[in-house]
Length: 272
Image (cartoon, rainbow, N blue to C red; front, side, top):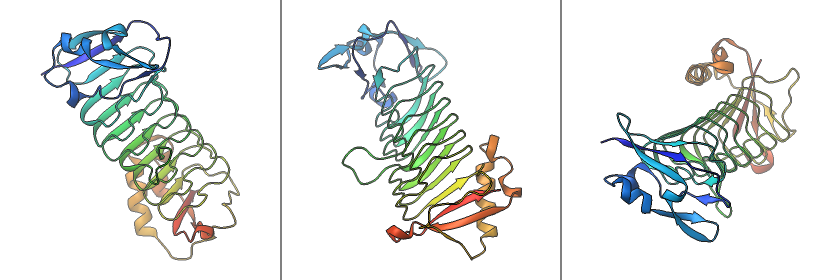
């Protein structure tokens, strides 16, 4: 079975909701069937053929989207298997609630990328907007599993209420990184904004390029117990990401526990 290639014809006048366009949902369909699938465009539903030229992707089982999809939201929404590749930027909620499969975005992603992600692997080669790996409005849990890799920079509130999984940012991260984090691992290769770990209860945040004299909030306290073995395991796992994480295992660390204002037992690890 081959996949499908969706070539963008032109930019839509309004935002388009691509929920439901996933490998599992399209399995067994013909090109004609795909062209008749309707997606949200503003307050109307419009056939996919209005936006994309659809052709078989011979020799590749992935769904491939070609073009600038920055006005297309929920690409990979609730994806439960298979593979999606986007050759340009995408809109909001990219990979939201996905539970399995692999997704690659070769550009940037908008707000709430990987929100409430539960499994699979999402890689964004560009930047991501605010609230990535976080929670949907009104929900209590953010990212719940899987692996989320950002090769660029991340906006504010990255990993808000994160509960499980691994979220890696090779570039910089904005304010309130790992706010209200419940569990999981977040690693950042570049600089971070204010209020790291605000309200954090559990989990690990690794800063691979902590600036000289980095001090967390006053509600975090220096850790006394040695964690050499655990740190080596974590550092070697992160080293597979390369870049700023490649030499973590050979570097000295400072570890702080908190956020005590939330009775938290999380850890901030700053590599020196």
